[in-house]
Image (cartoon, rainbow, N blue to C red):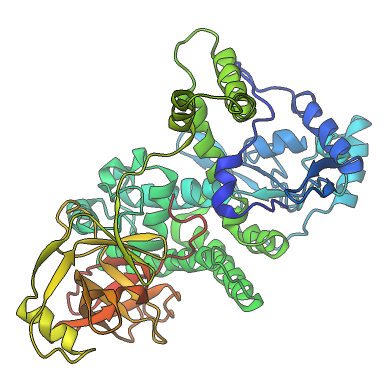
Amino acid sequence: MNELPIQLRAKHVMLCGLWFGQNKPNMNTYMKPFVDESIELYSDGLIWQRESGEVVTSKVVVTTMVADSVARPLIQNFKQFNGEFGCSFCMQKGTSVLKRRGRVRAYPYEKTDLRNPSQTDDLVEEAIAGNPTKGVKGPSILSCLPDFNIIDGCVPDYMHSVLLGVARSITTLWFNSENHQSPWYIGRSTEQIDDILTSIKPPCNVSRVPRSVKEKKFWKAHEWSMWLFYYSIPTLKEVLPEKYLKHWFKLVKGVSLLLGENISTLHLSESEGLLTEFVQEMETLYGINNVTFNVHLCLHLPNTVRNWGPLWAQSAFVFESYNGILLDMIKSSQGVSLQIMKTVWLQVAFPSFSQKNMVAASDDYLALLESFSVEKKMVREVSRSHGVTSLGRPKICMIRNDDFLALNSISNLENRVTVKYFSRVVVNAEIVHSQNYSRTFRRNSYTVILSDREESIFSVKTFIVCDLGQGETCYAVGKYYQKVKQDICSQFKNPCYFIPVRKSIGPLVAVQASQIKEKCLFIKTVNRNVDIVFKFINHSEMLR
């Protein structure tokens, strides 16, 4: 299992192989160098030295293989998902059905046996004898890896199967004009949906602001993630017919339970039930030809989490991001593979090269090396107090009347004093804005969750740094949101990260800025009496 903290994994992706060509490689040949080295690292181990001088031998065990549903069967030497017995996790045969001018393989819900390594070995023996059966075409070199499970170890990737698969395909069905006579068609409400969607202001650590559904074919996986888990329910609530919204809600809640940072057996059981119902109802609501392999894969997600932990721990997001880095290494159309390899080797060699040449290096040389290896600071720390760093140049002036009353709610101020006003602070490693910060009008980074017992929702109007008798301290001035009990989708309990709120009416109040726990996503609903605040499902993979 990858023992690196999640925030470091993306910075330590290893390029073990590169294929450049018009056709896919023979996977048993392509993977052989990796498998041979993995076996050596398993048996002999890797010898390294701690800072204390202690020499350690670490053994390497390959536990999981992450790939999309096209590459996975190639590596396992199984049939593709559009062939009979195309699921590499169970024995469902699938059904060939008509769709438009051709045929596709559908996977209507049915209870089937799961595959296991022992059974797969028997099927491999039959395939070697010339009788490929039950989707197994032959042996896979991954079977040579010590302690590797060729079935459970090849995990379904939710980025491809759920976000770029199920979420995208169902959303496309809703807006495709070919379905204008279908009960789920909502293409006539595109403008209404866009008005709500494009008015959403995510916090600044969400990489992209919402784009129109007319541009959905250009949405990235992260945008589909935001659509599925955050934007879709409040956007579709007054548009999509209720039975289809409830069906979609089961997907939203079922998958979100598998993305948490603390997943209990109850969460797994609830997710399993929701996703099973989602797949069962898919044929009735959308027709058998839309019960795709990606829909079927939803049934196998809970077991993957049961075996290997949350979905974000084995998703392809890190590797897809690295593909972007590889593309940046290509500067011309000639010798593409050589360009990539030269750049990769330079990156690998640079740290050891610089270390050898820093012994008697000049100041100019050291400055040059530092410019290559150290990230430049975009902001300068202005002041720091009680774990809060205030950013930017302060506005020093006499405290305003409403802010004076707000500070009086936590301390008895006899007279108005001179204070420092700030628009941005860093707290708990996150940049939080105030409403007065005008440079990001498409963002809302001022709605936050506090670290009190109730996890109160607070909207920051401004930040004030002053001394109220405990030394110079940063205070957040604003208003609380009042939590209300209201299920967004009738007959279903809200997921734990949905928080319906109503804005409190009253004077400004002040809290210590160090009480800010995290930013959250605020969305105004069509019903303006109750809005929704979303906590982020996890902090490990969500903010890419």
